[in-house]
Image 1 (cartoon, one colour):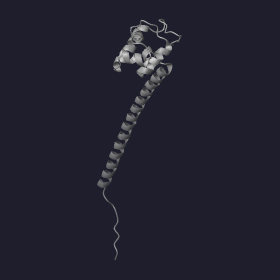
Image 2: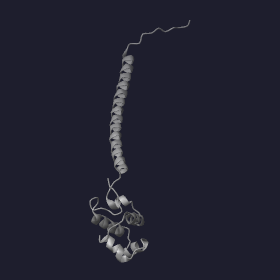
Image 3: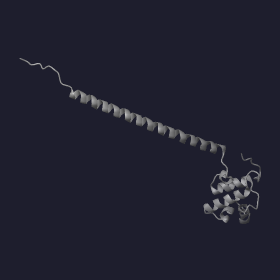
Image 4: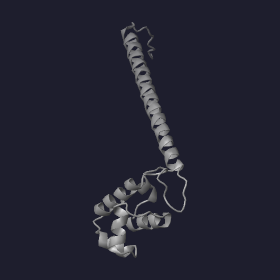
Amino acid sequence: MLGFTDKLSENMIQPENIAEKIRLTRIQKGLSQENMAEMLNLSTTAYGDIERNKTELTIPRLLRIAQVLDIDYKDLLGIESKNDAYLILENEKLKIENEKLRLEISHLKDKFEKALLYEVLRGMRQQQEQSERPKIGFQLTHN
């Protein structure tokens, strides 16, 4: 788990990766370095130093950059929260359970169709046997 200090430690996350993610995200969003510097109340040089990894990035500044870029700070850090990992795992479990249920429904459907076909054929056979029996009966006549 990421332990935050006032500065991002090189032992936790590689700062050059963060700087590169900031740069790529800025470009994806169609923003210039000048736009970013203005929104962050920094000089263009100071902002450029962030993207070139020439300055230490504080947590508050990282959070503000993420806000300006309209992304989650975890995306810049390249981390998933425990909750994200839990949700991904639960989603996979549900996919497996759904597949099991789909297979069970398919099996029960096949079983029902076979039983229905059996009953229809049995009914037809009984009808045929009844129609082939000689009819014995009495007719009452009125005089």
